[in-house]
Image (cartoon, rainbow, N blue to C red; front, side, top):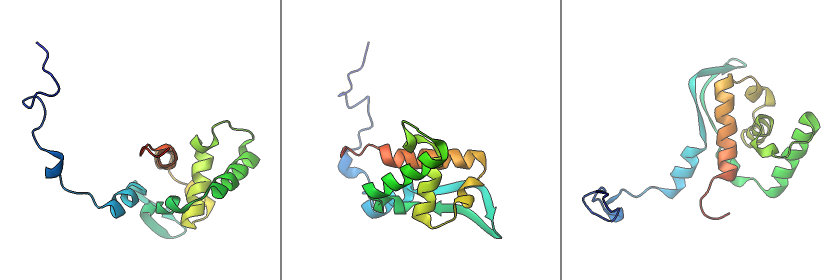
Length: 128
């Protein structure tokens, strides 16, 4: 016998108004923090995370500029914003850190960076 999804015995009975309210100012910013699994050293400093919340302030012109930089290096890429070089240029742009900072990330952290940037750009909040 299949239970109906509206059956209150099947789902958690907690109502949406019972859920703790999320602070809209911190939730998105926390999502844009790249946290490293292990501390990362670059030019004598050790980092455990990088704040990419500056992505929120980018314009279409910024996206075009980064796209042109990636095209110069990688040639034509039909989905440039999904590439690692694009994520590296975007991260450098919004953090003010040199490209080398992101180019020297461990491979696993670099993929997390790519996924964070692409996820931000393509993330669905219903407004696209």
